[in-house]
Structures are given as C-alpha cells and as structure tokens.
Amino acid sequence: MKALITGASSGIGREMAYYLASLNYDLILVARREDRLKEIKEKVNTNVRIISLDLEKEDNVYKLYELTKDENIDMLINNAGFGLFGFTNKTDLKRELEMINLNIKALHILTKLYLSDFVKRDSGYILNVGSSAGFLAGPKLNTYYATKNYVVKFSMAIYEELRRQKSNVHISVLCPGPVNTEFNKVAGGHFNVEGEHAKRVAKLAINKTLKNKLIIIPGIGVKLAIFFNRFLPYKLSIKIVYLIQDRKNK
Image (cartoon, rainbow, N blue to C red; front, side, top):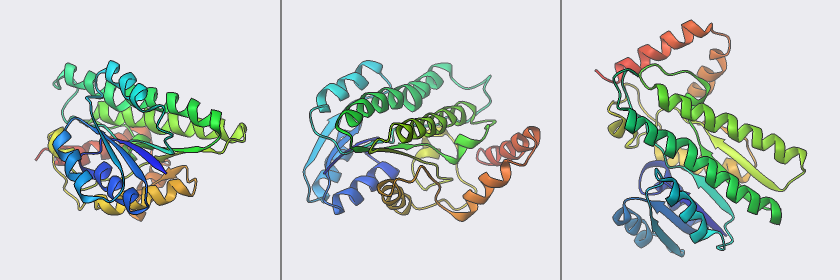
C-alpha cells in the first residue's frame, strides 16, 4: 500500500505520515521543506520518497502528478494549506491569492487527476483536509474559511457522484476545529482554547477514511457547534465567529 501526502512536513500531515507508516504504507511525502521530510524518512521503517515542491505554483502541481502518476498510489491526502488573519481590506492580496492557489486550486487539480486514475482501476482513497471552518463564514479569516467551504462541498459532491457510479473509490473530508499545529503562527494569530493534538486527529482521520466515512469531525464539542450553527440566523453566526477570531489577535 502507498500513500501520497501533501503538506507532510509538519502538523497533521506529518502525523498522518507516521501513522500510515505504522500501518505499513509506503509514503510519498510532499512539502517545500525538504529537511523536515528527511527527518520523517529517518524515523519510519517503510519506503519513503521525498518530493520538495511549492504547490502554490500551478505548474508544480501538474509536475507532482507527472512524477507520481505511475506509483500505484492507494491513498491521496491533500493536506497542504494555510490561513491569513486580518480584515479583508487590510490583508495582503498576493498572499490571499497564494492561499487560494494552494488551498483550492492545488487540491482540486490533484483530486481530479487522481480521482480519474482511481476510478479507472476502481480502487483508492482520497482524503481532503478541510476544516470546521468549511461550514461557516469567517470574519478576520475570511479567505481561509471560504477556501475550506470549497473543499468541504467539493468533496461531498464527489462522494455522491462515486456512490451513484457504484464505484469502489472513496473520498473523505477531515473537518477539525483548532489543532495544535503551526497554522496560527503562519496565519498570524493564536488559539484561545485548547486545540486537539495533531497525532490524535491524524489517526482518527486515517481510520475513518479507511471505513469510508464522508465527513470526519474530531471532538464532540466541534460536532455540536457545527450542528447547532445550522439553526442560527446568518448574522448571529458571523458575529459569533468574528468574536472567536478577534480573540486570536489579542
């Protein structure tokens, strides 16, 4: 068995690599920071191929597919992504477009290309890393929330398409709340609540993916918050989210 993981150098992606290696998966690890990927390779006992690429650049996304399309991959994990805190009229447009390229465009391209291959052979798993943000609008983290809405809905629709085709290919989307990773450092904020441990989230995500679970939400608190948000007026929902995000900058 073999898995390809983007954004594998830290956080959830790194922990997914360790857990899949413990399940005897060979790995293809993709990230910009080659040194961190080498550290993972040294700590596992399965075969690991390292590919250092910046997937914010569209050409590199297609390059990754060309480099790996003949590897007989069993599981694709689209984990690469980042966020950016701030008012939309003040955040850097270039950085936001880079976020859209990574969080949406790279994920879309890889999902579509590998999905086509998986469907042809009638096997394979795709795990897209979304967020609980994918069910909400997010003042002060606006573009990130919007990208994760795309990831969630895109994955859900593919799930139904595969079901209608009676395919043995399966897609899942991971939607965690706060996780103790480098996310907030990169985005420019910090958690005001205790985040989930990346190791626990990674293990749960892999196990649920292998059981063909569509939406994977770690933590009962996050599940309840998403559920009850359905019944809130939109204006109240965005006020609550604003207060949560605003606290991250203080």
